[in-house]
Length: 93
Image (tube, rainbow, N blue to C red; front, side, top):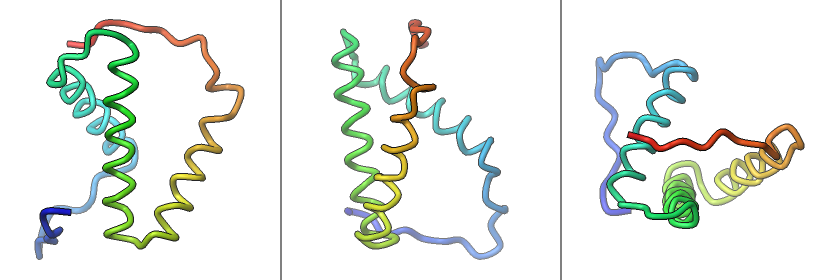
């Protein structure tokens, strides 16, 4: 990765999981809009790019074995029938 992670002494406590998820969703919406996606395929492609970059960043921070285990766990989680849809699709602002 191009930049080292710097932890600030005396920084605020880490976000709760719910707050982190809300922030991630907002930032992903900003990213998708910034990519000027024209189709659902475009959206899928730029989201896959985020997964790839996040995977490499996890390798750099927690090691390859842990990163792979986390991504495989996520893949197993989203393969559950409850995530098969149907999904509500809407334009994001």
